[in-house]
Length: 221
Length: 218
Image 1 (cartoon, rainbow over the protein chains, first blue to last red):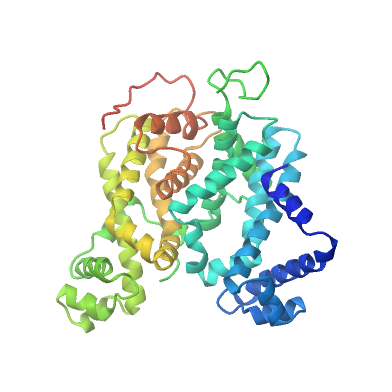
Image 2 (image 1 turned 30 degrees about the vertical axis):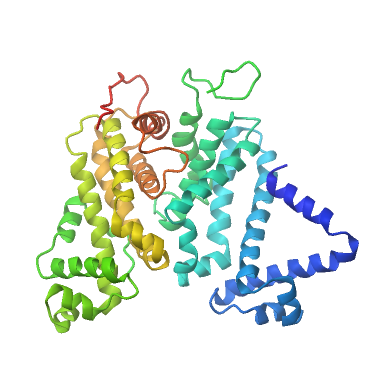
């Protein structure tokens, strides 16, 4: 299990039956905030409006979350975790490394390009979200994606090439997200596959031409 | 500032011309950069740009009818253009493609780290700078791609790789690494050598090239 799934399991264990209601309320508020941002953006999203959408009072919403910032940060975190879990399941079912990498590219791109709340903010309030993708922050993104790749691709790759594969996917997806091109559509499987086969797979091969796969007899890359 | 479509991107030479236009436009763009350095983006106004340039407000508006937003947006694009001109000049006489790419990444990384104005604005007003950089993104990808394609066409490429598609992907990776080095150390020539030869070009250049000594003292 990846670290994110473990967090959810632990959180559930900390909230026994008596507080299941709070859990569901928390989820409803987070869902409602994403819906609100997709509709009107971050600036015009209010805790009051989110509470209304979630079917609770403003006071209750403020009891669960300290305020708008806490609410939106938790919502972003939940979206990310949910995507991580879904992608992780699909990667675990991939029969080959190539399939796994193509899935990673296509699903990540589709998730980001199709996320209505994210796209609203990128289009209308770029200053709000771009700092999370700017300069120093990209290193954090690549490190996190690299860790995810190491855990998800361990049956195919040693940690070092797996981390590069993760970073490669993140760089490629973000590049196409912010600077879409006419020739390559990353949400289109054949286009993604071509990039993976041409530019990623050769880099994952060990110097002797074999895939750097984790068998007990293979040397470290 | 209107969105710059990648398909209408001029070649690097034209981009250089765009960037090195005659006075007083250049003067005004330079004055805007000076104001941003002194006051930050939010507090840069037509008034202080005019004062800095020693010109009237009316003159500024004549060249930048879109006002503050336009002059700031174009100043940022201008600075980006100047950066890539410096980068191209720095790698000009490097023969081997791989060595050229290594030199470019090392130079670009250092140039970004040492760019005082960029670092200051990233720290204080990233939300005002990054949207502008994103707008000019597709143009920059196109310029770097146009620069790389003829160079790649002269190389021995792997089966199934076209200079055009490799140029597009490499341009994106160069830009991506300029923004962030990720798990690599772009101040370390050995790390850059490994990145370029074992990763970035592994799928681009045909295998079996004679090994070339990279001048790691550069």
